Image (cartoon, rainbow, N blue to C red; front, side, top):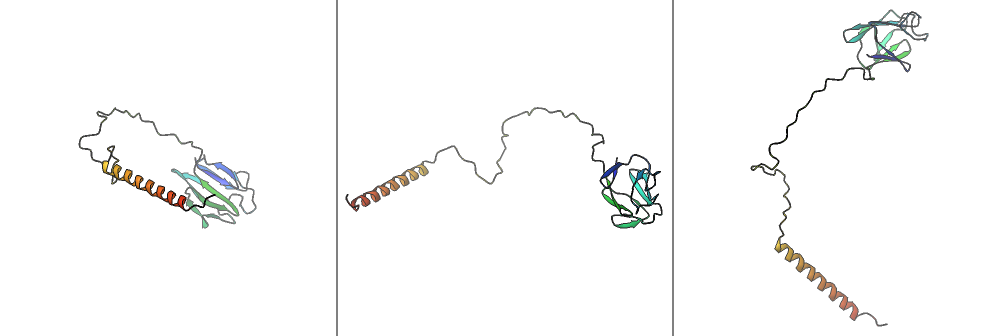
Length: 163
């Protein structure tokens, strides 16, 4: 059920005809001098409410527009005289949940890669094979680096001052 929130108080709209005003005989009573005794009414039409101003002194506005009669939409801002209200959907979850459907599953027939499967990735896969040329190059590079570092240490030791 939708509700009408007025000054922080939520009124659930459960009746077909709801009267709003300052008078004690209204369904929703607003104690504000700018609200007429019988200010407006809400009439349920189908799934929503129709708001009708009852020739109030200070008028009724919906989303800032003066109205005499209009269909309300969820989250409409309503102003009765100088009192603000909001037409809200039901957030309590009182609507029924949809029926659950049982889903039957079956195991896969094959759990291996199909014969005609091709990898569509733009990145090549890492191969488990070792590349002997690359390995020889890296070993040779490491030996050259060690020889260079050894020669640099030897040159520094020859020119180092004695203690």
